[in-house]
Image (cartoon, rainbow, N blue to C red):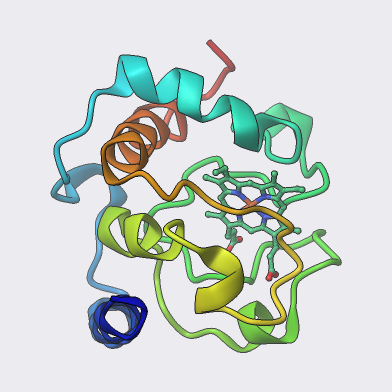
Length: 140
Ligand code: HEC
């Protein structure tokens, strides 16, 4: 099972790299979670991540308009791991969904000290929420 998810992630990483530059964050397809439930799941991320662009970076990089951005490249965030600094893939909902199953396993050496969201349903909800909230100019 572990091996299996690593292969899915690698495939998604490759797909993300290929899609680079072609993605429109607003038209990305979605995985089918419930954003209202996702708001609660995102509580575990809020201690480190803002989605409101005016608040800048926290312990983690700002997540405003994160979908469609190349990973690990946000100006002003100084704590990216070597892996994310070198990353060439674009964040898509699918890729974030895969990564958050176990970030520390998917990217050993990541500076994100989080166990992610192992539950698939909760993870889909979280991604749905982040898709909405990351596009807002102000915190809801
Ligand atoms: C303890 C603080 C912390 C928590 C909790 C946390 N993160 Fe992070 N996050 C980080 C750090 C630090 C990085 C940079 C990771 C790296 O460079 O390896 C990061 C990176 C990211 C990125 C990539 C950003 C980019 O610019 O490429 C995303 C997306 C992300 N986190 C989402 C989440 C979500 C969703 C959650 C909740 C499930 C979460 N994070 C929980 C600290 C945190």
